[in-house]
Amino acid sequence: MMRSAKTTIMADNSGASIVEFAMVAPILLLVLVAIFDISFNVYVDSVLQGTMQKAGRNSTVEGADYSKIDAKLTEQVRKLVPSGAITFDRKAYTNFSDVAKPEEFIDENGDGICNDGEVFEDTNNNKLYDTDRALSDTGGADDAVIYSVNVEYERMFPLANYIGVDPTRTATAATILRNQPFELRTITPKPEHCA
Image 1 (cartoon, one colour):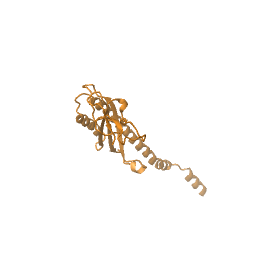
Image 2 (tube, one colour):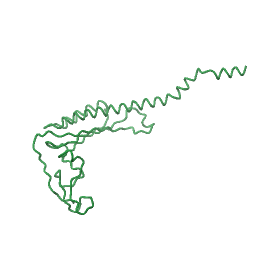
Image 3 (cartoon, helix red, strand yellow):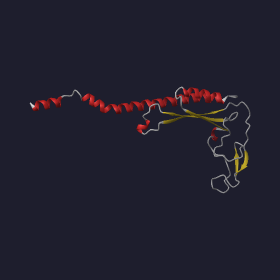
Image 4 (cartoon, one colour):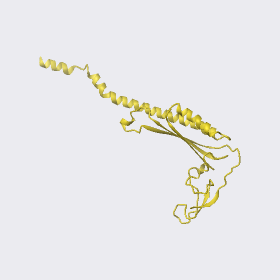
């Protein structure tokens, strides 16, 4: 009799599904939340890049109102991340090949640093040696302009703290376009001396 009761208990599988589900459910939920979070972030990146491309094209025309362009981009981004911190940056260069390059100088003492009165080409006419030869924030006619935006926002799902992921995320989009040639170039580089 004892043997048949033990065999019956060992053969009974009626509660196994519930126990198995209880073991798998947390992992399944974590994977689902991670997929939703990644999908939302990819969607934000996609919308931000598309909106940025349109805003960049609108920025290249003569008389563009940059504050209106930034406001329109902000409006589009706020639909997805209402509390996101949005920052804009524009840098203009004479040519695409000048982007993020330092101003040229004659390194007379060979130390790789513009100092001791060495002559440099003041590309942006600010009388200072710059490690980025950007002309201004918006540029003039025919300038190459990098227009970028950063959006920092809280992740949609609050589990980031529990799995060791930063609870905030930064999405970045940038475009580089040439302003339309609506006038003659006004900035001419002049030689200056390093401090």
